[in-house]
Image (cartoon, rainbow, N blue to C red; front, side):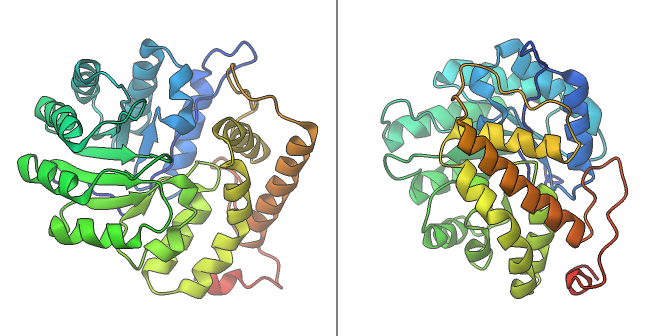
Length: 326
């Protein structure tokens, strides 16, 4: 448990499907290989960005087993376990620990409003069931996320509550409060595609959970910003921010944008989103293609490989990337 440490980018691995909407397991392994070569601090699946809510329980568990097998001794695997029923969550976290996950991430059940007492009972039982680190993910657009006092109390009872993932604007004060109340023992991860990354690194976040398609760019930007090279981090960050903002207008839109970017990078061959899904409008598809072209240009300009299976593009002599990538 003590060896598991997040310091940087933790991409959420999407679930690739074939034309029949069945999981393409070979493509999943390719996505995992790309993450391993993209300076990922860890990987997470199957989460919201993995379309977990469209997967059977057997598919969810198999995705974790495949990831652990593919990334063994390379990158830690965080198993996402999202259930509203405490009993089901407890059973599942035990299973993924046996399957070799390095940590577990559980979303706060938000189908209906729950008070801190109910959430304390829920996560207390989950934490009693495992001894690997737990990450609590909380996205609550209709209200406030988990309170600092709840997080501090859970950590007091269970020191292996090691991280929280928050997805909300204007959260720098909350990041600082969590670090203060837990003596820095509970790290804070930013979700929401990394949209607020640059403003939250000075507040003390330990990492970001974005999509996989831009994770290598964000990994470099994160490291530069932590090293105080904010201007150079911004040069990279501004290249991907339009894609983050556009795609996160709607989660199903995000799936289309993410998978089309991965296809454009040559990492997967098909950008299939499992139904039921949002009908992609022609103008949206064209804008995704436009945004992807800008990201591909940035990858080439700054010397990134488009995928893990080829060499980095030659950096044009006019680029400033020599300053960014010493």
